[in-house]
Each structure stands twice: as C-alpha cells, then as structure tokens.
Length: 140
Image (cartoon, rainbow, N blue to C red; front, top):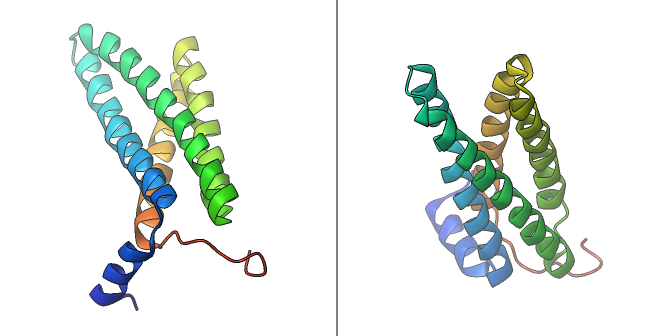
C-alpha cells in the first residue's frame, strides 16, 4: 500500500525528465477532456462547437506527439520503457480517431474517443503514482 510518506519520497526522487513527462501528460488530459464538451455543444445545435472540436483535435494531437518525445526521453535517460509504449498506444488510437472524425466515421470516432480518454486518464494516474528516477543498466 502506498502511504503519503511514500508519495512525498517519490516526488523528491523524480528527475526533471520525469517531471516533464508528467507535465505533458497532464496538459494532454486537460486538452482531451474538452473534446466531448465541444462535440456536445455541436450536437446541441451550436455549429461553432464543431469548429472548436476541430481546433481541439489539432491541439490534442499535437500534445500527443510532444508526449511521444517526452516518453522517448524518459526511456533513453531514465530507462523506463513503459511510458513510451503506453504513449504510443494512446497516440496511435488518437491518430486513428482523428482521421475517423475527418472522414465522418462516427461509428468509430465516438467509441474510440471514449476509450482514448479512458486510456489517457489511466496513463495520467500511472505517471503521477510512480517516481521517475534513473535506473542502473542492470535494473533496466
């Protein structure tokens, strides 16, 4: 069981590279949570909501690609592979969802959007629960 003391200790052991990944994942979550709101505004009849949804999709996708870079840095510098693999899965789903939305394939766009948000929230929790300190080569 993780205690408050463990959490505080983990915060002190996390390197700047780990904090960068946490910041990017946090921004990613904030951006992606707005997407259903903009889609809902559009579906209620306000057609400006679609424009905001499209802008939000560009922002979410861009942050996702920045997250890939941050996850690569965590992998290379700290020898933690799992954030890269999880980020690639989320970004691949986001990319498919992006193009499904452009194509109007709502049968794919909506459920994939729900799954992508859920996956990103799980990744957010994971990166904030675990310290990101450098592993020795034998531990990697």
